[in-house]
Length: 44
Image (cartoon, rainbow, N blue to C red; front, side):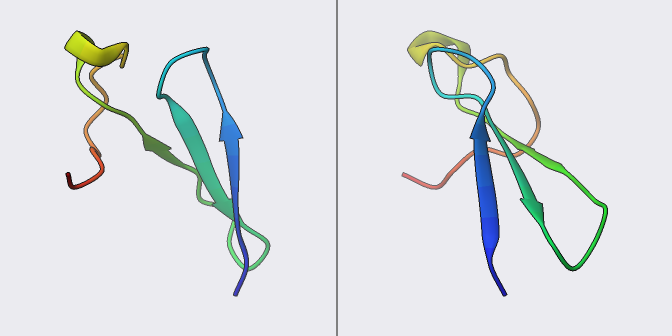
């Protein structure tokens, strides 16, 4: 499976998608590092 990441802003907000499903997932960080406070945060 391939996962595609598309940058949604100039900080750390990405949108993840796959060719296998139509679901898109927002991947973000905390507002203190430029994120937009979406629910899925990468583990640090």
